[in-house]
Image (cartoon, rainbow, N blue to C red; front, side, top):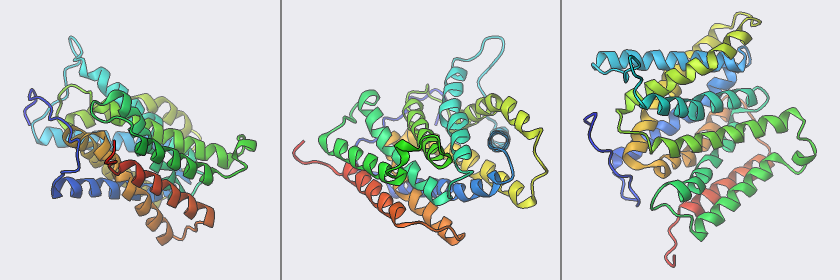
Length: 309
């Protein structure tokens, strides 16, 4: 795609090719398996230090990839390219803030539960798209799916959540939910970015995100013991996979298919996170399974076409 070519319009129907669906599934696998890696690393590495490391690994990997392909970041001097403002905004909403929130939350939550809570991202995306994305209005069916999905989240939080907002578990779940909302915001903003190669946009936003989190990451690293090889390898896998490669895939899918199609990965991602978590010995109670089923039902309802609307 030419650097100055107009961005293709997002698909507003279900006519996506096999390659589109395979690409979406690959993203879901990258993100769905990231939670167990995150759980492994955050037990030994402070959250902001972990985020700093995975962001710099992802950013450096993409910069190397760009250099191999003969691509360059937009100019910073003598006058910064206006796309840097977009990169900073996308970096904060799609990496710095959600990565830090989810990492902090996962210190006390199983990876499978985190993956399930992240499923509210497409519901939030649908609500935001109603306002900011032409052709994606909030129908009664989508609204019903949104309400049902939120009911599933309330079920996961439990009846005591409102009475125990100061509790670690409740705050951790709320942090993950807020992280999912940030991802939804980024999905909408990314659709508005001036035409930019996906690898360049991903590298730019990761670089901005890494710079923003670095002071906090260094501060927490000063009191950290040396992590194990297992934790370090988990961070490396997060940086290269879910962060670097996942960042490119995210920008490509949003560019070619729109934010709502990207949000479909959240049908698959929670299931992948659950399966991986179970494989690593995590156990889910009945309430979690019920909440999972209600959230997925809300997602399915929101995606169905209403013939009378």
